[in-house]
Image (tube, rainbow, N blue to C red):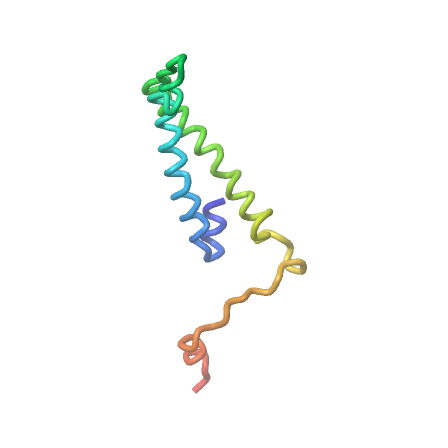
Length: 103
């Protein structure tokens, strides 16, 4: 869905989603590789080691399309049919309007 947003001229949702999942992946790496906050628990879980890195990247990559979908359909309602979509709020910039004038 990242390519959908970029094709529509909206690269920021993809950028923010990727930045958020860098943080999610870092947190999951800490948890799955080293044990995260569970290493200090009484049972002392130490994580999965290097296999945990693969588990964390797989988990974060599987959750990423879910956040795209929630943004697209639940939050912004970007992919609604044209008749039920609100009109765009963007106005053409004055420099574009100047170039549109017929001489």
